[in-house]
Structures are given as structure tokens and as C-alpha cells.
Image 1 (tube, helix red, strand yellow):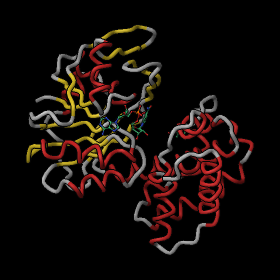
Image 2 (cartoon, helix red, strand yellow):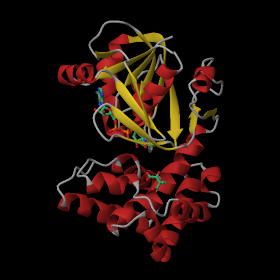
Image 3 (spheres, protein in one colour):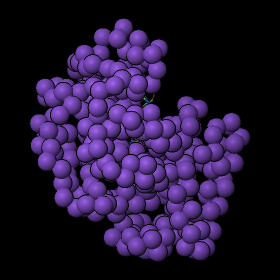
Length: 303
Ligand code: NAD
Ligand code: KPL
């Protein structure tokens, strides 16, 4: 079965090249005729892993192609997920399966609601990749991918293909717990790293702020029916701050490079959930206001 991959960005390219390297059929879906022409001129996708470069001439097409899609990896940012899926919806087979790679929460449900007949698997990834140039990807951090389906506990039959491709993964019947946990970590670390303009390790100089946010996020997770995601959150946040001390968070990198952030699907999602539950979380909502002001001052989108 062909792997269609929508979005030849960092993670999309990382998955595409590893699947192609394993001899599995892959097709890229690119945004525009200009991007398709640029891709063809580049001759394929280049994976840079431990300093070694390998190019893979993976076939590519536009959303308007007319072949049916049975398996789709949606590898765009959370804010692009709904329009991206709309662009290929007419090509999806009734039994199609989609893997939604987006960070945060909110975009997955929005996509799944549009596609009641197809199966949507949610993915939580801790792999790291970036693009030094168009159609090149650096595999920057080994990590893991958890896949799950909140509507059905049974794994799909093709997980062995990920094994063959060397994509570290695990089926996770509690995928929402994983996604909430990661969202809470991202809410405790990423906005503060932007506001203090520091690497993750710099947050060890702001222990009271981190602790207050963790206490409120713990309360939120418990209220949202995610007690497992709330367990020892503060200790985990402190562990991640030390383990990634030298790194800039993904949101810090987005803001520094003038790119749109995924704020709506991270802090925005947390604050909206708090509001739905009538929870008063002053530190979290103050953090959201400060971050929105920071983005506005830099002319960056607020959603
Ligand atoms: P990216 O910006 O590098 O790639 C996204 C790609 O999708 C871009 O090339 C964009 O042009 C393309 N795209 C958007 N809409 C499209 C459309 N309609 N048709 C075709 N292509 C379209 O993003 P990324 O870093 O790969 O991140 C993807 C998701 O994975 C994000 O939610 C991110 O938070 C998450 N994530 C990324 C990393 C990482 O290391 N990069 C790690 C963990 C999680
Ligand atoms: O996931 C992250 C990110 O930067 O988005 C961590 C490592 C949790 C915080 O920086």
C-alpha cells in the first residue's frame, strides 16, 4: 500500500526518506505547481543523518492528482491540518487511514470530525528534524513515535512497515494521555522560553514561575479526565528542562525566525479547556496574555 505524505517539511521528509529507503512505496503531495517543479529540479529528498547524505527520488504530485489515497501521513503544522485535508478529501478511499503528526491538541479532532468514514490515527512524536535547505532534512534527535486511535483500541496491521523503515514507534491505546502530557510540558516550557528569550536551561532561573504553571496544569489535566498525564508533572518538566538545557524550544525557534507558532493548539487549547471547565488558572491565563502581546508586538499571527 502506498504511503502518501502530505507536506515535505521536516518530519514529512524524515518519514518519507526512511520509508523509501526500506523499499516501501511513497508519494509526496506538494503544495503548488511551483513547489513541485522545484522538487523535481532538486532530484528528490535528501536525508542527512550522522553527517551522511542520501538522496531519494521519491515521486511527487499535487493534491489535485486523481489516484485514490489509502494511507496518508499528514505532516503539516497544526494550523494547516484542516485545509490540507480538505484539499485531498475527495481522493480518500472509504477505508483510508490517516496518521496525524501534529503537535498539541485540537487539530486532530477537527480533522477526524471532517472524516467520519476514515480512520484517523493520532501520533505523538519526540523525534527531532530540521531543514537546512529546501528538500533536505537533518535527523537531529533520535526519539520515539506513539500512535493511537482514541476511537478504536486495535493497532493497524501495517506497523511492521515502520519497523522495517527503522521508525521507532509503539502502539499507544492511551494516545490522548500522551498528547495531553506533551501539551502540558510544552505549555510549561515553550512560552516562558520565548518570554525570557532563553534556552530551555535558562528556565532553571525562574523556578517559581515554572512551579506555579505546573500546579495549574496539573489541576487542568485532572479536571479534563487525564490524571495519568498529570502525574509528577512538575518533576518531569524539571527533568526536560535539564535534559534539553542547551536547546531552544520549538516555539522560541519559530518566534526567533518570524514564523507562525502553534500557540492555538498548545497554550490556547489549555486555556480554552480551562474556560470550558470554569477553572480559574491565573498564571496560565496571564501567560497566554503575555505571549499574545509578545507575538502582536512582533507582527506574528495570534492563532
Ligand atoms: P514543517 O513546517 O517543517 O513542514 C510542514 C510542511 O507542510 C511544509 O513544507 C508546508 O509547506 C507543508 N504544507 C502545509 N500545508 C500543506 C498543504 N496544504 N499541501 C501540501 N503541503 C503543505 O513542519 P514540521 O517541523 O515537520 O512539523 C510538523 C508537525 O510536527 C508540527 O505540528 C510540529 O509541531 C510537529 N513536530 C515537529 C518536530 C520537528 O522536529 N520538526 C518534532 C516533533 C513534532
Ligand atoms: O517539545 C519541546 C519543544 O521544544 O517543542 C520540548 C523539548 C518539550 C520543550 O522545548
